[in-house]
Length: 214
Length: 330
Image 1: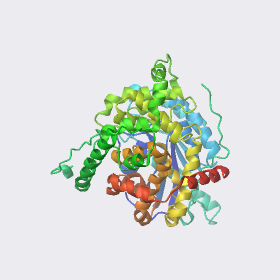
Image 2: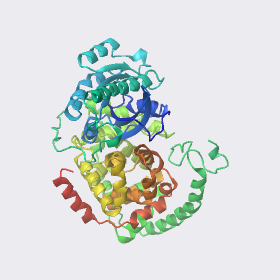
Image 3: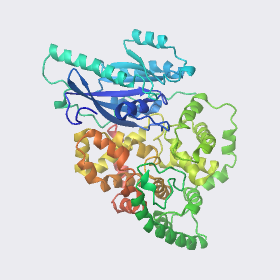
Image 4: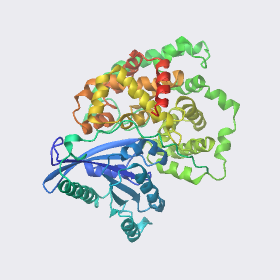
């Protein structure tokens, strides 16, 4: 896919989050391998893939972490928000509840991710026109109010998948390269020369969540 | 696709799973040439053993040895039920399962989250579509029986495989209960506390036995949670080839949680050079996710099980590491 795997100017860690079944894994496989699996399987734990793209003649390598959507899996996955510079927060345009839960995911990011993380709200399954339950305008407005970028995608027919990743990676690149102009070298964490080591141990110390009673 | 031409094996295995385009029929044929003989030999041995009416709820040294060498398919369900005591529990509470199915209103959050996973459970199995309702019943019944666990993603694969083997909803329910509560307690709970603990224990075992592999993983930055969460949560269901999973489960039911560590460690030791040969995190992730879980080493279940038991591993070691891990907050 264009640039050689081991040569890049920037390495960006991006996480894919959102409710179970909204299509996170298929967005990832569409972007990294141009594959869509109709017989998709539930993701257990955390998965991982990479792809490099070009922006302004620079090679940007995206390291994308795909996470299980079920709430309890945050015990494992929240550790992977650390060091992430971008997040694709995915919901299913045909399942309103997955959109309502976006607020919970935002809170999750606020608690565990870097303060400056770039977040893109992604309404996936745009091919399901006849089943749509989340109006585009509503989601767009919500995104604006919360300072998120917004796009609708279909991993199934490929619509906007490339654009979504291109946009968020470009946005991150702009921020990082401007920051470098403002406060030069001193080694940005995102430069490949000192890729931030990803800690093995999940942060669960402060994570004794109350179990909700039904 | 051409790989199947000239092969005596169907493109669907005996449990209904499609073998997939990349399946290596040649290597499989070679393995089966010898494994079929093993299976026949084991079957004769088991026939003789069972004729003596042994107490299958007691793990005698003979029974343990026999189980490690594989329970023949036709006897598997009965041996699993007996050795775990699930059959006794089922007899003690004969109405439990049916009463759980008769609950008037299932908790919607639970039933919805199970429903999302039904089409995503074994879509590559040609018979399993017909089992989806039964799978729903088992998972929903268990989630309402054990509210502390409820439904955890991954249990769909365990219950699904139990159903494929036992072909019996109620027995699957009791075996699922045994796994979740006796083998992997607090793995599937809301904070997944023991899963995190055991991933840390597993890392420590790797450090002690193959430190160079651990160093390599840490150099490349691939966390154990990415590599092994699914191994522990699903006890290798939907990870390794079915026959290998069932051989592992035979031992898990007989000998307990330690077997899961043995299998995970054996995956590392048998693939040591492959792991060390990956120079990039993406290649390494792909090795763990795609390549080594279906290669000839793991497909040859008989020799893989042997390599599991060739490792030195004592329950004490795991238990003391667990204590340390909990003290350190994993």
